[in-house]
Amino acid sequence: MNKRIEDYGLIGNLVSCALVGKDGSIDWLCLPRFDSDACFAALVGKPEHGRWLITPKDKGPKISRRYLPETAVLETTFETTDGAATLTDFMPLGAGKEEGELIRIVSGVRGSVAMEMDLVLRFGYGQAVPWVRRRDYGIRAVAGPDAIDLVSPMALINEDLTTRAEFTVQQGQSVPFTLTYHPSTREPRFIDDRRVALQGTVAWWHQWVGRHEPPPDVPRDWAEALVRSLITLKMLTFLPTGGLVAAATTSLPEQIGGVRNWDYRYCWIRDATLTIYAFINAGYFEEADEFRKWLLRAAAGDPDQMQIMYGLSGERRLTEIELPWLPGFEDSRPVRIGNAAHAQLQLDVYGELMDALHAARRSNLGPHHAAWHLQSLLLKRLERIWREPDESIWEMRSGPRHFTYSKVMSWVAFDRGIKTVEQFGLEGPADRWRPICGEIRDDIMANAYDPERNAFVQSYGGRNLDASLLQLAQVGFLQPEDARFRGTVEAVERELMEDGMVLRYRVGEAGDGLPGSEAAFFACSFWLADAYVQLKRYDDAAALFNRLLSVRNDLGLLAEEYDPRNRRMLGNFPQAYSHVGLVNTAHNLLQAGGPAAQRAEHKEPPQANAVATKAAPEPIDRE
Image (tube, rainbow, N blue to C red; front, side, top):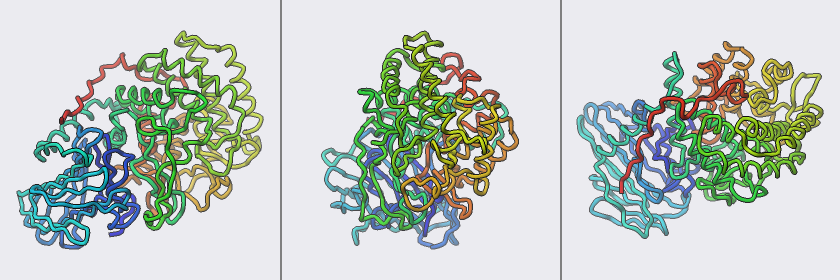
């Protein structure tokens, strides 16, 4: 079965995650962490690079699937000529940073269904064939530091470097399989009863979703989309540190057969502000504060060494390499791990960090003073470098330029510094920062505004548009009623929209240093809907929001991009920034003074100590 990106569902345990195809094959799993080597890499390779298939022997079954309501538990139903069976997939929480479990339960619903299981374990992104030994509970597979046990009551056959089983499930019967990871130097811990683990996982997610503070009068389909996006963001959160990975995968292509294939299993500073607003407006103050603390730890140290992204625990060395033995998703090469963009200069991250921490203060998240000392040092560095060219929010590989959004976010950094001094009484040279703010604004107006088109352009002296400039009013650089903002929005509508969705920029015109093309970006399309709200074009905003909801996959998940002409998703999946956009746009549409107005400081954000927040569910202790 040739699967598209949207054919996958996500399960996870807040430490790692797996992608499950409609056909019952788990084609992507990194253990024990999001950024660990994959032991199932068929997603960017072939079945022999690792996968775990459980499916009916009867080929061509009718397939339907869903998440158990308000959980991260995935249920796939197969209907054959002889009966129906469900496959329940989930990852129990609380296994620990160096351990992990994935449980699959096949249950008979009607009649009898003959099933088959193929397990192909390949450590090291499909390269290392493990040594497999039989155990009374199933098998153990070991390769170097990694060990996996498969626990099952079924008879297992090892042949052709694959573990197989065949079984029939009758109505009312269930057959469990547990895959458990542990370092090869340790013995595996006790395996819990699978039904108990399922009940505990469902209960934990119900309690977590119960903390959600939905806007009033939210339509049912919007409410379901909000909850699914919030669950997805929680699944992409690395619980031990609070960091949010940009996506679950690496190297899913922005163009089928192209080279725009990147590793997104890291945490970007750029995602900070909008993520914090998404969490606080949904009532998840604890998640917002944990992400705030991750930001402070990651960026701590010499301000000259600040990066645009870090590892899950704040790791700085994210060396990019290619894996030549993997053919890539639909032959989209190369497959990369690591991300060379971590070494780029991107001035906008200074504004993002300052803006995120300012938002956190306004919502009464965490202590102020330690963060302010770091912020003051970062502004000292930005004072020296804001005039320099950089690689932009889009991490271009064509050499540095004076990108407009980078300059705008430099302005945001000093603007938020001034407001912190004025609003919170913290010490800082606001009198020195005010003329810098003015100088940056004058520089942008003189070099980035095209009066003939009444629009801001991507970089100084150029004519290309950039969807990031849809945020000019949201960050407070322009007022929504400013004709130049309206003109920029209208120029994006004319020149960057395809089939109702928004491109980041025109690849061929911008010269980003890479061959090929890319599709429309979900995040940019949500930004346009936000801009419509700010311009009081509410019907246009709602229509675009509904359009974006309509192209989610059947489970409510979004990748990074969407190709409207071929009606398929592209880029890494699921993409946190896309789901952050969905949450924020929903709140902008549903409440007066949503995240866009809060960020522009036209409205106050929700307050952590001024609302009846619900307690977070206790972490599951499984030691």
